[in-house]
Image (cartoon, rainbow, N blue to C red; front, side):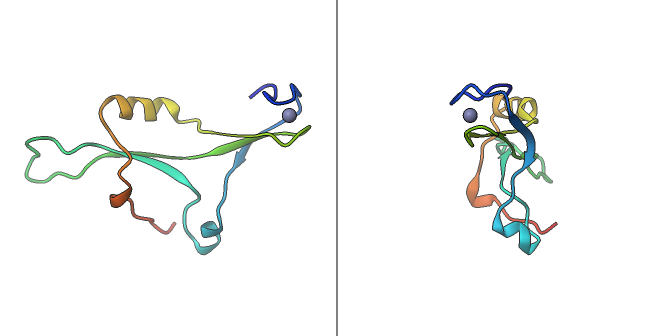
Length: 96
Ligand SMILES: [Zn+2]
């Protein structure tokens, strides 16, 4: 974000890590995860591959407008095109 879409200011504070309360308990900050779909005939030993990313925030220093973004969009798009989906019921939170 080079200029604020709300007010036009170029006083942007970029590249900020996004935290949640759970981060204080040793959990990961918010993230999205895409998981490989199960093949029709999976091999005997199969576990799905996955792609996950956290977020960064960019905040306008003039009005506070905040945009979340990830720098790993290319990997996510590639996974999305391969049928990976965000399967919340299989999502487990792993302590760091
Ligand atoms: Zn602004």
